[in-house]
Image 1: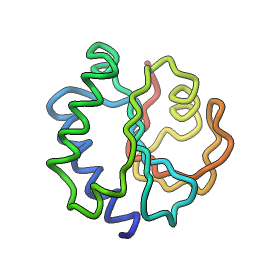
Image 2 (image 1 turned 30 degrees about the vertical axis):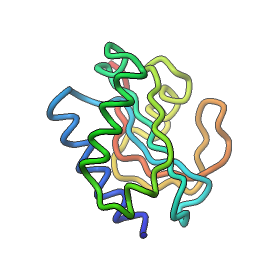
Image 3 (image 1 turned 180 degrees about the vertical axis):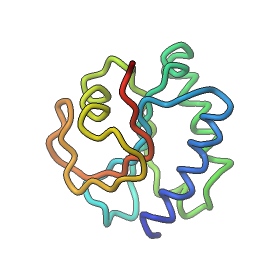
Image 4 (image 1 turned 180 degrees about the horizontal axis):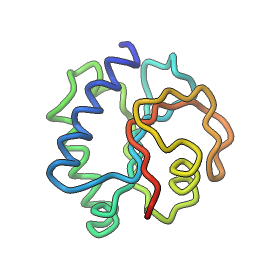
Length: 126
């Protein structure tokens, strides 16, 4: 599994969810290294996930993820983290990395000072 295949598959799923539910504040894949082939954490934050609540939003995203990528990419994601827009990690990511489709060799945001990731979508809160 290559990270760019995973990014492409998950990016398409994020786009579909965005069309159905609204904008994301943050959507990213996070791991200890960009070379990792498993144990990716999909981190998301959106106004609609804030309203929906963590458990229902996590179920919705898990179902969308299950329907989306191929089996190899699906197995690469071991965790889905839904964060509030007010979370320090989300605020820092939006402020420091307001872009989309950007690989990060070193993630430094909120209390996180290590690890790598791929920002699928990051938008500052108005």
